[in-house]
Length: 373
Image (cartoon, rainbow, N blue to C red; front, side, top):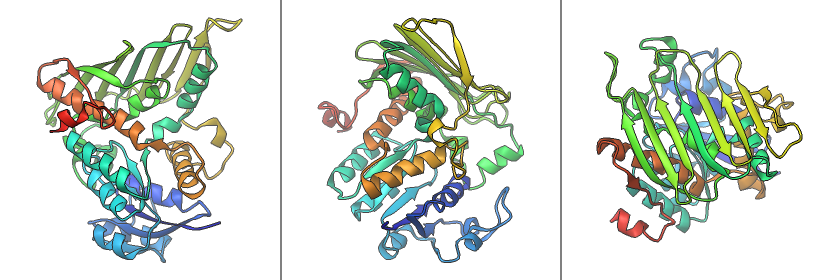
């Protein structure tokens, strides 16, 4: 089995965790890591009794990303920088024909989408999107439900991502330890966790958006506390999304509701007991069924190595490594990543215009060239 020499850029809490999970794969060698803050590598971190430098004594540490790409002879790099600066790191790796797993959102502007799309087309390497919600149990169940004809045609969907984070709480300090992108990023821009799973059963892109924000409501707030967006496809499918990043109530994180012409499925997360409920008019028993709504995908539930957000991080990395090493797996493509990222950028612009309905375009559209000019 050929070793995959892997690098990681960005050693915040997520970068550190993915480094440790990736090291569990036999075909992966953690060859190099990079961060502008050396103590993320050399010092013990939150909830850990060891520094990463002690866990991986053979791994080269860099503060200069360009130098790592030039010297470390990498096959792949995982980009775990702040959510507002992914694209430039991905483009540099692609330009050197190094495979990339980019965390989401993929880009922070339409211009970055243009540059990243072009870089991916020119490169001999490939780029995939690190959208771990696409590997959760709900997503697999939804796709299977749809493919079996039990849902029918989806015509309306809802999603919400409500992130509890009290000011000055341990969790709040931990999430913001290496930068303030979580504090500054407009909530609706981080829409990928919600849209990604839903888009897996649509055969068309989102085309229209209207979005409103509440404005800052807390003393510590610097942006909209809540934002609500409504999207529509060309055929008329509606997706409604509510998103925030500074909720003062512990009510749950990720909720989804999917209405189809023949059935229905939802995931309700209330921390203590997340559940998935569904029913179909195409089954003998048309009553509502209920199963556990944990993130862990069924295919990985008996794998003792499956870790990270209840196993979905492991599933995501497994599919990435299979794709670049064996041409197998089901990694989330760049196109799929941009389809769940760009709606957030358009939604932010709609909110700035007081909820004006905007038409959305993507790099694969013939109209894109006129949009980006």
